[in-house]
Amino acid sequence: MLDPGIDAGGGPTLRIRKDVPLAPLTTLGVGGAARFFAVVKDEARLAEALAFARRAGVPVFALGGGSNLVVSDGGFAGMVVKMAIPGIEPDAERPGRVSVGAGVEWDEFVRYCVRRGLAGVEALSGIPGSVGGAPVQNIGAYGQEVGDAIACVYACDVATGEVVRLGRRACAFGYRSSVFNGGGRGRRIVTRVVFDLAPGGAPVLGYAELQRLFAQRPAPTLRQVREAVLGLRKAKGMLRDPDDPDSRSAGSFFKNPVIAPGEFGALEEDARRRGVLAPQEAVPHFAAPGGGVKLSAAWLIEHAGFHKGHRRGRAGISRKHALALVNGGGATAGEVLGLARAIQAGVRAAFGVELDIEPVVV
Ligand SMILES: Cc1cc2nc3c(=O)[nH]c(=O)nc-3n(C[C@H](O)[C@H](O)[C@H](O)COP(=O)(O)OP(=O)(O)OC[C@H]3O[C@@H](n4cnc5c(N)ncnc54)[C@H](O)[C@@H]3O)c2cc1C
Image (cartoon, rainbow, N blue to C red; front, side):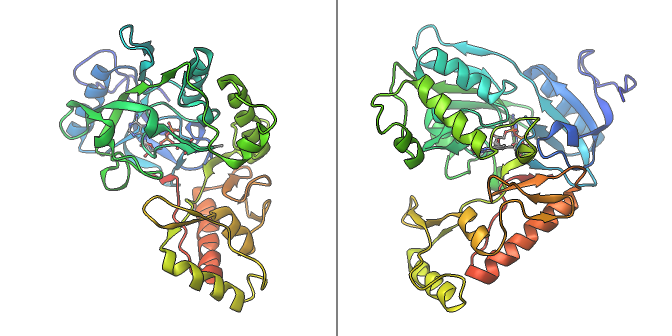
C-alpha cells in the first residue's frame, strides 16, 4: 500500500500514498479509495500536500475522524489529507484560552477541559471526530454548541496555501452550519482552533434530559455532567464503541427540519387527514432561532413507518436511535444512501417535509 515512489516535491517528510481505502478511516465504514493520501502533522506538510495536489490538478479533501462522512463507492479521485496536527496548548497569560491542533481527538480535548475545570464543552462529551472537524458543522448536543466556546479558527486557504485567522463572527456559526460547510465547503482546511472556556464555570444544563437527571442534585460538577452525557449517549448508540453495532454510523443522518410557523398548522392538519396522526395527537416541535419551528427528524421518521432496527439489505436504522443509519456489516455507500432516499420519500409523503442529510457525501 505504501508508495514511496511519489515525490511530494518540496520536502522529504511528506509521504503520499496511492489508492488508500477510506472505509476503515470512517465510522460508517463504507466507500472506495482515495487516489492520493497523506497524513499531515503540521502546517508546512499541509502546504506541501496542497502544492502536490495543485501540480497534479486534483481536488483536495480534508479528513478528520471520518465520523460525519459517507464515502461513495467510487472513492475520491483526488488528494485526501488526513489532519493529524497535534497539541493542546493553554495560554499562560489568559486563563481559559486554549489553542488546539486540528488533529486532536475531540473527546480527548473535552476530557482535558473537564479535568481542569474549564467549562464550555462538557455537554459535547463523547462526540466522535477531530477538533478540526468540530467547527465545520458547529457540533452540538445537550444544549451546547461548539461555536459558543470558540474564540477563533486558523485555517489554510486551499487555493492559495495561506493560513488565515477567522474570529468567531467570521466563522458564521449556525445550526449545524458555519463558513466551513455549505457554500464554503472545501475552501479552507482548519489547522488549529482557539477556545475561550470559563475557568471554574458551571456546566450547562440546557436540555430536558439532563435537567431531569440533575433535578435532585443541584450544582453538578463538570465531571458529573460529562459522565451523565456519556451515559445518555451510550444508551442511544451515539458513543463510538467497536462492540456496539448500532454505533457503526455517521451519527444523526438527518438534520431536524425547520419550517415557517405558518406551515406548521397545515402540516398537522394534513397529517391527521392522511391518518398519519391520531385526532388528539400533536407533532412535537420547538422554537428555532429566527422564528422558525424546528421538528424532530427522529419523530417524523418513526411516524412515517421507519422504525428503529429497520433493515434494508446490509444497511439499516440503529436499534437505539431512529436518526442513525448503520452499516449492518459489509454495506455499500449505495445501500446506505438508498435507505436514506427511501426515508426521505416516506417523510415527504407522510408530512410534506424535506429531510436534509447531515453527513458529507464524498
Ligand atoms: C456515533 C456518532 C455520534 C455523533 N454525535 C454527534 C452529535 O451529538 N452532534 C454533532 O454535531 N455531531 C455528531 N456526530 C457527527 C460527527 O461526530 C461530527 O460532525 C464531527 O465533528 C465530525 O468531525 P470529523 O473530524 O470526524 O470530520 P470528518 O467526518 O472527517 O469530516 C466531516 C466534514 O468536515 C470536514 N473536515 C474535517 N476536518 C476538517 C478540517 N481540519 N478542516 C476543514 N474541514 C474539515 C471534512 O472535509 C468533511 O467535510 C456524531 C457522529 C457519530 C458517528
